[in-house]
Length: 180
Image (cartoon, rainbow, N blue to C red):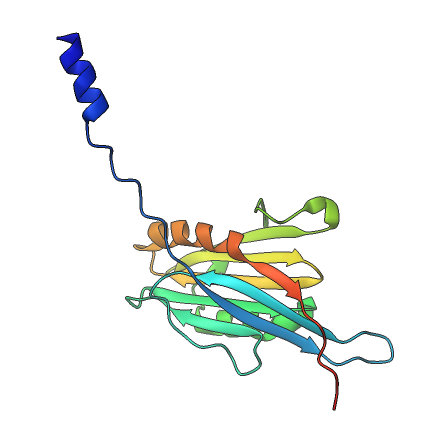
């Protein structure tokens, strides 16, 4: 009888592992010209986008707004070199989602964000008629804002997806193109 039980355990079908989510990498561009006080910047911010979320990068190259595959909500990803560059995005979010309110800031631990180098990740939980979160990632002299606002019924699934998105965010400096 023990052999039968052991054989059943050994040859039992292995439960199919959860299929990993395939994110599509998208890129934002931060470019500035040199001034007398500052060097020129040519920086790229890459982020994995969940399957089915569609939308375009803004013509300025610094942001993209996406809509969920079933219209469940919106995702904004924006990159900035200074906090003041995020004011327009935050103002537009407040205008579009007046019933959504962010919580006080909460520390967030993310792979690739090293506090000893002055980097940090901060989460603001969004509550109201629409829910979600706003995440600020500060590293490599860059601020990446990721805002997800969705219908409360789908938030648990979208939140799990976003947990896979944040670790994909990378910031890379490229050579500055020579001026003509």
